[in-house]
Amino acid sequence: MVEVAGKPKNAGAVDAGAVRAKYRQERDKRIRADGLAQYVQMTGSFERYLDDPWAARIEREPVSDEVEVALIGGGFAGLIVGARLREAGVRDIRIIDKAADFGGTWYWNRYPGAACDTESYIYMPFLEETGYIPKEKYAKAPEIFAHCRRIATHYDLYRNALLQTRVTELRWDDDAQMWIISTDRNDRFRSKFVCVAIGPLSYPKLPGIPGIETFKGHSFHASRWDYAYTGGNSYGNLTRLLDKSVAIIGTGATAIQCVPQVGASAGRLFVFQRTPSTIGVRDNRPTDPAWARSLEPGWQKLRMENFSTIQDGGTVEENLVDDGFTELSWRALQWRRAHGSEVGSEAMASALEQIDLERMEELRGRVEAVVKDPRTAEALKPYYRYFCKRPGFSDEYLQTFNRPNVVLVDTNGRGVERITEHEVVANGTAYAVDCIIFASGFEWGTALERRAGFPIFGRGGGSLSDRWRDGIRTYFGMHAHGFPNCFILNKEQVGLRANMPHTFHIQSQHVSYVVQYAQQNGVMVLDASEQAEEEWVQHVLDSSHITREYLESCTPSRDNNEGHPNDRLSRQNGYYDPGVMAYAALLEDWRRDGTLAGLDIRR
Ligand code: NDP
Image (cartoon, rainbow, N blue to C red):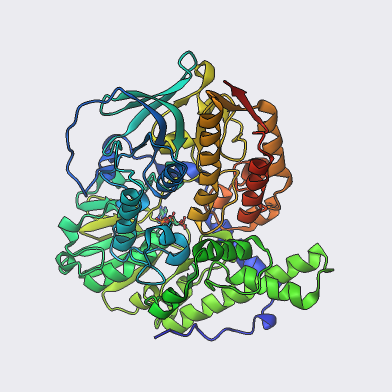
């Protein structure tokens, strides 16, 4: 049954100025001088947190051959590009991934309760092509992982793949006009094209809490769930936790999904909260077979476009997905319709703030309606603008705090103070625990090469990190001058909203077009010209409406550099603000033009 959200307060009656002041106060509490540096990289003694719990290592001989296209990463980005290349008739493809199978984030993240937060009908790629319909509106992790394998099989991507293989270096060989790819399996092979498809959230991070290394109990990162310790599986039933005291550190999207499962099984659960997430209604439901049968060819693309158009702030007649990611812009669209096209930007900004306020009041009202203990409820209320942090959704998370074995340890924005051999300390109180689960997220704002785990050396031997030292510089978010025949599929300078695979689909068309063009026209080397790169970076900056004022008003998050926004860099290293659909249109025009404008070509 769909749970009804807490009775919304009359947002009109709320004093916007007072709320703004409260947001500021909550934000100020959370600003730390160390910003991004508060997290520790998983190297040295922390490296064990990255071990693969899902597969034993299989030995193999090193590879030293040559391929046409090497895709680094077998998650959604690598799969989507690989599939498109196959559709375009490219035969010689190699996908390399450190995991033992395809799936990327869905290979690693098998924690109990894991599921997609973006509707599965738009999130899971190639549903029409593979003839698959997800079982639910929000598919669970095992189903999504199985679908990744389905795509890899359907498009014959297992052939020639190197799994359980970590790339250690990408180096452009100007004489051979090829990339040399080195790996931790002593492979050293060449590829004409490379595609860096490592995913924007693939490198787990740990909070640098004093004493973290001294803990003597059991601990793991949620993306490497230890079922041998907890019992159960991705659907829950963690029977081995019955007599355990467990700490979960973090209350983001991962925790929102695993807290209910751990809470249902553990003897005691302490959830350590620094900033509450928004918890919108999830309203998951089985796929209606009649609806699935009624779908016309091309439906998935149209549904993705409908979702992204709404998120972009565009105009559509219907909100097909109708979820918590589209809700705000959908309400804004209704407001624009009611007020006509002549409204000024100030009136629009003020309307958006009011819409945001209403939404946040509803969410705070929901907390109050669900959580029985008033102090816990108060601590779970989020005070910031809706998109200052990635929204969360659940119909079980808030309810879990009504369980007698579950304690919310709110740290009033300060975070965990210390970890000792057997305790987690917050607000001066020590909580004895057997196990700590770090739901502390993934690196996002750090350098691409650090997240990828390998350096990329381009023409003349210079590294990408050096080139990007003063800010990311790309052409279309995918090409970098001096790094020929290389496509970067990431989040910077590209049109991106909540449905990341949509962006990968758009980029895959570009990659497959360029590779085909090269094949059909005897092109050996393609490199973004410095001017094209310059112009794209300038366009990204000029078209950004993200203001320093807005970013500074937000509670610390990945989008404002943990509370330290840099005016120019936040825009330069951010998304292409006009949005997904504008990005798609721009690339489509570029292909239609057919001259490969901005790419220097060598035959
Ligand atoms: P997040 O980065 O969202 O959350 C990390 C949590 O750790 C935050 O609550 C953070 O608090 C907290 N934290 C950090 N340091 C400390 C500290 N010293 N003491 C206490 N708490 C601390 O990580 P997630 O893994 O939850 O999610 C990352 C992203 O991955 C999501 O935003 C989403 O994009 C994606 N994701 C998607 C899912 C889906 O679609 N189903 C599921 C899971 C993840 P604070 O907020 O104050 O920084």
